[in-house]
Image 1 (cartoon, helix red, strand yellow):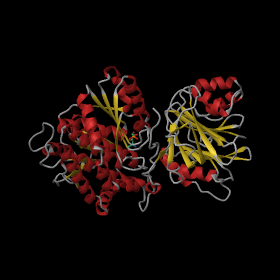
Image 2 (cartoon, protein in one colour):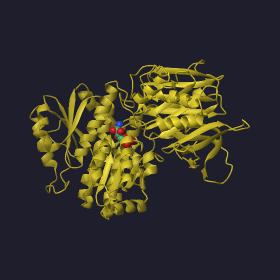
Image 3 (cartoon, protein in one colour):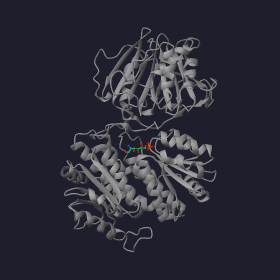
Image 4 (cartoon, helix red, strand yellow):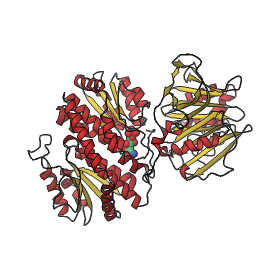
Length: 621
Ligand code: M6R
């Protein structure tokens, strides 16, 4: 949800470093971009509508400077146009800001600033920030002006500011991620916690891929914190100092060395990140299983002791959570509650210090999940984060973390993180049932089957099916038991990258209404279990016959049946073969639909990595 990056250091290529970083943050927003460079005490601005990846640089693009900041936008306030693109200037042209988040009280602040004679030129909420800083600069230095400005803002935000004429960067965080990257750290003591850090250069960005090719050393800012970067007194290096927004007193922070390799965040030979990440599932399932058994046992124990366990997530992660209801009932005979992050506040009356909250999130920065965490903390609820991005807000705010270990996921449509999260929830259900070893073996076998399944021929088969249905207006997906949340997830995948209207239903629900939508040729994707599957309290031969009956009701009305199943059936117009992997079935069932959605996107000339109107990490409510 908007990517920001800034650089201050010993290199004179700040503009280029910022633009390269923005390209790596493009997944956070891609309707417009811009960057500002400090040149001879003035600020030079470049802004454009469109994707940063399509920006063509030439010899004149960048100034020779060691201070720059940039932004790639996902519009929240104001149309997508050049004027609304960041960075934003104060009315007097002295202060420039890049911002991620929402200033909820911007209307009130505009009114106040208008009263001071400020003329606004954009429709954005952000424009109040540089103008407030100017107001406070009248009696304060930059650090204090930024701090006082941050105190005035309501909502979730992260912003970076610079002032013409000063070689400084100042940034504040409250709710949206902000990470400091330190190039060539100069340690001055053995202390692990530092209020001041010396280095040759500093980056401040929304996410680590923006600068990981320059340094693995980072400091995560927490809510209510700010950082100021400036040259050392001798002007031979730079230093960063941390402060609290409320009092302005020094805050001590820890430097973390990440072991992520930047190369892993590149596409390699794949046409798109989405395809690369789908294929990475050959190994990510195995990596997800490498959990610390003590931690798994600890979470299982927390579930046993809890009076009410809630699984929360949003979008795809929400669908992953929904499988938990079935998996925990079937494997561990335990009822758990599942609710979207944005709905969790409705449960506040039931939360006590005996409640357990398990949040599933790829980014660990989803605002709806972080809001749920705030409520949980207020109520003394224990929290467990099943999270992919190490160091994210969910990871740092959880009592226990189960790392997803899927590596950097760049495509907006989640694929490898999804199946890794499914594997971890399945493992947890086995741990709760006291059968961890059985679960580990079952999932490892499923992982090996995925390894065999994911080959170019399988992908070509899905591409052929995509060719046949690429012009349809609507399609539907059905499943029963754990396949029901997977039907919902399949629909999300199809919607977000193919832009075809897709909806998921519990198989037995079609006849209660949605069947009216079926006309000749309407595709129905049906997750049909193998004969031997046993459902929760289901018939001895499993749900296959029951789901096939639902399928035949659609077939009788002209629907085109795409069966996802270990076994073929005469009802299927197309058969997508999946291995029969017992309780790991949701993991293998969703993979071919990820591929189908990918091929539909490409055939319909959509960019599957950067779907319209979306962003990878949704840091606004
Ligand atoms: O980072 P998170 O897992 O918390 O993100 C939650 C959703 O925004 C995310 O899953 C979204 O639905 C994806 N684009 C789906 O592919």
